[in-house]
Amino acid sequence: MSAKDLAQLQSEIIDAAVCPELAASATQLVMGAGNPDADIVLIGEAPGKKEDEQGKPFVGASGRFLDEMLAAAGMNRDDVYITNIVKYRPPNNRDPSREEKAAFWPYLLRQIEIINPNVIITLGRHSGMAFIPDLVISRDHGQPRTVQLHDREYLIIPLYHPAAALYNGGMRQTLIDDFLDAAGIARSSA
Image 1: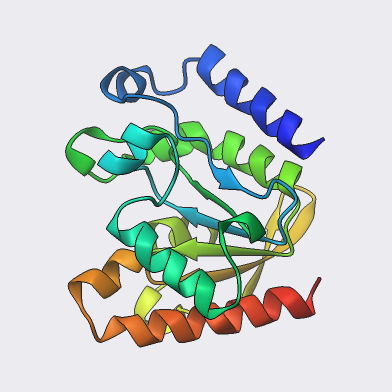
Image 2: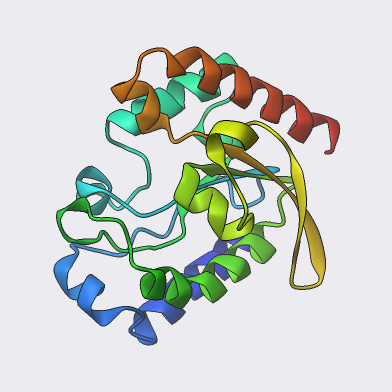
């Protein structure tokens, strides 16, 4: 049922012409990928160039490191669901605007409700701050927080974005350690 509901939600986003300027500059909508009944949802900010081309989230260099993080926890992409707040690639990989994030927010909430995960792992400061407005990623990474979304509480675990490890090799182990802890929390709350 979840896969069908997610496909319906994707159609609604297209039919509602959410962020038409972004849609016009993008190749396609990047809804998400993975297990629609996953216990863990990973949420980035917006698709990049490779994601826009392939229609799947986290398939570039950051995605390869994300795959490494998943493997370290004994998982793969079929065990989780991966998406972004904004579903179209912003031109030139710029950060999405506040308005663009706000336009997609209700659809992201519905996506989360459909999947109904035990844990939401945010990837990067921008994604984390959408759920935890007072987030300071350098202080709060890896620290679980319970957040009320609509009528349900979710466990949010903010992590650094996988790209951080590409720019700063010293971050690799921090990200892997945080992800292993988050995966352990997700398993224990299943």
